[in-house]
Length: 222
Image (tube, rainbow, N blue to C red; front, side, top):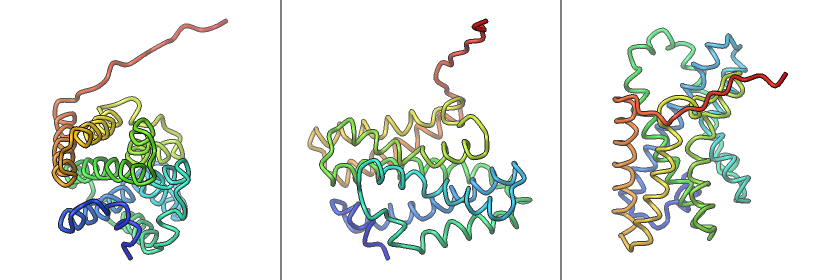
């Protein structure tokens, strides 16, 4: 079931692989549920909910693999991932009334997913021997693309472009991972350290509402 992820995490120790694998599964479940909630805010039917849940959870990895030419795409070989995210999305329609009590948990799961997806994307690109800038872009594509697709399909400006630090966290994680790797740090230690620091950075950004400067241009070209 996990052969493709095992290939991604080949350099990692077994215990660490198990940890990241569990986080990956938790992350795609949480992302699917966030997609379902976004679909509900747009009054979509159950088919729309399932599509948005799928795109949010697995869209980032799909875009990365298409861009990198990494075939076959992971979920096409493991339909259980598709079942997991779609069922999670549909289950959200039954649990939505209780979701406001779980907001903090969702934010933590989303932060875990962002960092995990970013590291997965970096590892995939490294396995394919891409240059550094492509590795960074692959990590960011994996981390943020699902949320971007979700917001676009829900007719919203993607939140990663206009609110608290999100894409920036992915960028920092990818750059730090490659910098420590180039410095000769053990890959297991490197991954764990980047995971902890990335998660902490994201949670601090939420706690203190850290944002990048915004650009506003209102002049008309009449």
